[in-house]
Amino acid sequence: MVFIRALARVQGGQVSVSPRPEQSRAPVVEAPLPIRTRVLNALLLVRNVLLVLLVIAIGEALPPLHLLHAWTQAHQQPLLAVTISLSAAGFILLMGMAIHLVLAKGKPMSRREIDALSARRLTAQPALWRRSAYRSRGTAAGAQGEDSATFAEIKAAWRVRAWRVSPRWRRLFAGLIGAALLATGLFGLFVVIGSPGIKLLCGGTLLYAWVRSVSAFARA
Image 1: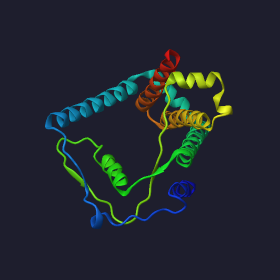
Image 2 (image 1 turned 60 degrees about the horizontal axis):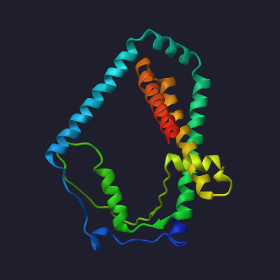
Image 3 (image 1 turned 90 degrees about the vertical axis):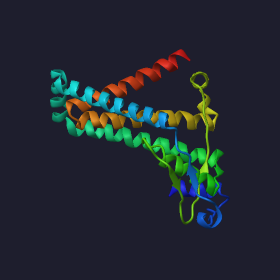
Image 4 (image 1 turned 180 degrees about the horizontal axis):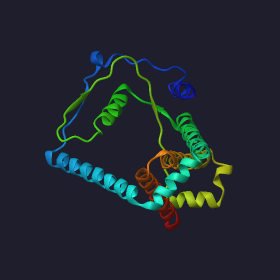
């Protein structure tokens, strides 16, 4: 409800009603990718799936992970409370950042922009051969806003405590903290409830993401 009200404020107090696209605009048609690109994408998908299965198989064969699994099962309730709380806190911070961004820097989206965004999401799924057309019916409303900063800018803003005086940096720092909490909570949840192989996969992925992020931040 809060997000809908934010959209309404960006739209000027009322959510505008767009006519049915079949009466006013042609459907958004996505051009097919070259066959070579589609085959390479499919091969990359197969490779990634095989890597995931290999990691899970290795995890199932490692005795230390079976010991970790037994420990998490014995302490599952408190561990679930921690991971779910982290996920909820991260989601709230991210949604708060998104709502604040729409209210502060948002601009209304046209019906064509909404349809184009939906079409890109539809065609993001991997496939060997695909040609798609997207058409939505009924009313639609949307707003878009964007903001970005480099690691060097974030470090400089942190040193001078820019969040004390700048709503933009308060929003960005809240979003970064929210993303970190949400990722840690969600992957931690699967570490708690998953099998030894899933523990290795999710725990390794989370550790890799943290190491890469901290390393990039330190080098900036």
